[in-house]
Every structure is written in structure tokens, then in C-alpha cells.
Image: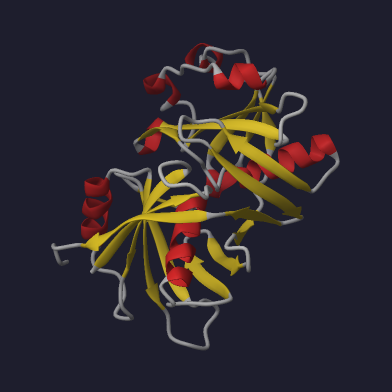
Length: 272
């Protein structure tokens, strides 16, 4: 079985967010324990597993995502990585439909090499600032929103870009404050080539800081679109690896556009 590592939401190797991608045949997925062990072995924020579905259905490929410690409902960067592998290997062309735990997702390929994902928009619900959040982040929140069942994060607005970049979180405390993680965000400094900045912390699912989190942008897009009055925005996730996500808000759906680069292509020598 071929196994690949793909850097997503970047056009340069060793930046963006690396995801493992493993494609199975039409026989389907092996048992869950094998998938989890592969994801733990790769030790990336997510590893994507996919297999083709019979023609004529609502989706073309089944898709699942695992962190090193658990399966998750939604993952943007590993979906982008999977679509990139399907298109660059000739396994798919045009628009690809994925059946996932969060519903049907699509990926559309463009002539310039970029890919656009169609994901459900996260519902945002204002919440009081949880006790201990400011101390765990090391910054005082301006506002806090719940991001709904599939994303499962707290979206935390901070005063400015410098506050987001300067965070040094207490990860064990953060792990107990949300179902999946915490997205810290602020408006970009004037003159930046992006509209907002973010960082994503997910210690509850085994990822202290995620380099570029596509699913988080299904919450960031409506949050910043409401403040800017624009549906087309660009977000920078300001991790050490960094990456750009172009977002287009379409009501109940959010489009995420980015690029990807395959950096490793090998053979998995252990069979299910």
C-alpha cells in the first residue's frame, strides 16, 4: 500500500500542515485499530484514509481522519491532501465527492493547481469566557464562541495580531476547556496580505498546536465575514510552519481554497 505525506495549504515543501494519506481499494477500510495504529506511527496531526465507492451514489470516495490518538469528525487539511493525491496520481479528476462523518464534502481542482473544498459552515454561538481560559492562553479574550458539533472548538477573539502570535498556552489546562480545541484569532495588522490571523491548539485530541487547520476556517470565515462585510477573505494561520487559507462564505457552506505539495511517497510494509 502506498502511503504519502502531503503538506497542505502551502505551495512549498516543509511548510503548511503535513497530513498522511493512505488509499485503499474498493473492498473498504480495514478495522479501526489498524487505522489508529498507522496514524499513531506517522504521528502527524491527521492521517486520512480513503477508498472508492461504487458508481452512481452520492459520493465517490469514503474518507476518514485520525489524529495520533483518536478519530475526528472533520479535517480540512487532510481532505485537501487526499484530493491532491487523487488528482496528481490520476485516480480522480474534476470534482470529487467524499462521504465523511460530517456529511458529503467536495473538492474541485483548478487549472492553477489549487483546490477548493466545500465544507459545512460552523454555527457560532456566543459564550461567556470560561474560567481559566485567559490564564491558560496567557491573553485576555475579547469574545468567545462555540463552533458547533463537528468542529467542537472554542473560537477566541483576541485584541490584535501580536497577541495571537505571542501566545504560549498551558496545554494541559486547555485540554479540559473544549471538546476538541481552541482557535485564537484577531484581525490582521494594517497592510498585511491577509485579513485575519489565527492559531489552533488541540491538546484534547493529541495535537498541542496544529500548523494550519482547515476545519477551523469554517468558523473563522463566518466570524470575520460578519465583521468585515465581505464574503471573500484570506486567513493566515501563524504557526511555525504557517499557511494561507482563502475562504468564501456561501451561507450554510464555506469554501476553503489552498494548495498542497507531496513530500514523501513510500510503501507501507505492514498489512491489516
